[in-house]
Length: 390
Image (cartoon, rainbow, N blue to C red; front, side, top):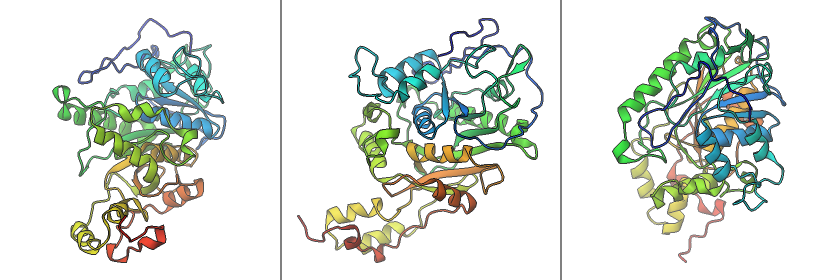
């Protein structure tokens, strides 16, 4: 963790409407630049340091995916959040209450040691070496001025970025037209402030779109939209052991049903849909009636399997692993590739495999909504399902 953060001019944000303090501490820039000189490079490569501005589970899942891909993720959050993250969800093995086998390869410890409560200053690790940034808070806790404070940051007249500006910038935002109003894991009725949340997201989005890195021709910034976020741990195919957070993230609410859905997403909803712009994949009006009719004679357990087989699409929900995998690939793509340059949406669909790099590239080049399956063509035997009632 960076050892020094300037005390003069610190901005400490305590965002109202949440039960915990979500703070980002940034040194004074000594005068933010009014324009951004676009980087000479247009994508990230292995070994590049990437700033992840959070907080949230998505930030941590993305950090693990980036580390596994050979990048150097730098998690930015309040000290309180960082302490909780590395005690409970990215266990480092060197705390008294850890078993010691949570971090055999030292990835969690490296992510912890590189984490910070603010931008690095002159003399700090990674100052002048930063190559990319992802704004990846799950909730609307980032104020609009953080866009310029991060992207235009200087200390003692020097830029924190290797090329004077990020080679690749991504802003993660929720889709704006959700059909299913999924509550966040931290939602508590008495503190619910939906209107303020929507307003906070809108202001942050406007600030990002107005920044030269996004608004100017030839800019290298992108918006990646996500649906309601679920999953992100290890209760799924074996590969998730490399990418997932501690299973404690499944138990962050009092709703046992929510915990089961989080696990189900990690088991069965790892495939992706890439859509152009800010959109969802609405369910056809007759889909429910067709499924009810076509599947009515099948055994109950077989009927229940229909929506987790054959790339069955999600309307407006996204697995955290799926989003993280996509973000790793977007960072490595130049802005000219398909929808990567401006705005895209990543949603999940049913499969127990994370998309490959080649599959992501194909989806970026030809984005489309996943097709809703015809229930009359459902053949359970192809998926090894028995039609006999147990």
